[in-house]
Amino acid sequence: MNPDQALDEFTHLVKGPEIDLGIAALSIARIEHPDLAPGPALAELDELAARSSVSAVGGRRALDRLSRFLFEDEKFRGNAEDYYDPRNSCLNDVLDRRLGIPITLAVVVMEVGRRVGLDLCGIGLPGHFCVGARVDGELVILDPFASGRSLVRADAEAVASRAIGRPGKLTDAHFAPASSGQIVVRMLRNLEGIYARREDWTKALAVIDRLLVADADAPTHRRDRGTVLVKLGELHRGASEWERYLMRYPQARDAAAFREELRRVRQTLAEKN
Image 1 (cartoon, rainbow, N blue to C red):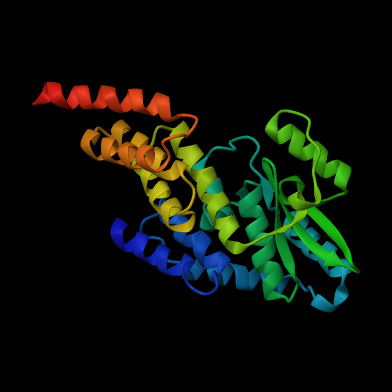
Image 2: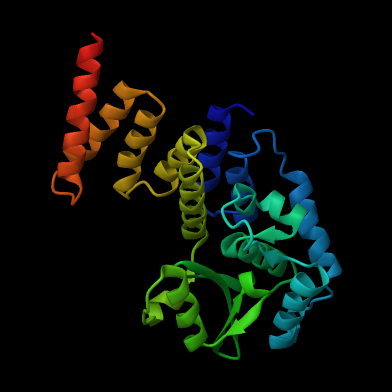
């Protein structure tokens, strides 16, 4: 699938009335795997649900059984050894390798759970992503990166503090269910950081193009698109993006720094003429 077609497909998925999280996650994976067909991964999710022997009427027992099945029987686990491998962010690879990061492992849990009738949600803690379920009026939180370990609020605060590198108190808002759209955006932001870390600017650009669709109101994506285009040597296009960013957000905290960067790029372009 060519890049424009893949972006058009992603746009159709996330702009529809309801986002299918599994299909959207596989659409994101096409950045890393351009020829990926979603059928096999979706069939694997169906197969996992069928083999899980989980019944939605089981309440907390059903949730615990699903967790044991995925993390003990099927051996899904967090890839702490190579956290920034982009395959950890691709649902198809997570299903194939049984390795992932918190958010993609959470997607596996939610998508398998949905297939057996469990009402699960994503919980986007600072720096860490979990799965939540309401059981008898109480929120039960599972940490998919820690083999589905159940977290009380103090545990969740400790996990989030470690993830962001400083102590922090969580509010009720941190435990609100994340929408499918919010999960898609968080997956993309993770992947953008991974590609930037690897200086894979072409793929980083593909991620930002999707963020501009899924998270259109955020100001930083236009700025970051300009930065990546400059990294790719596309100085005219990069400068144009920075100009658009600065025109729309002239009082941004980084506006002065980017005006200076823009001046340097314009000078470079003038010297080439």
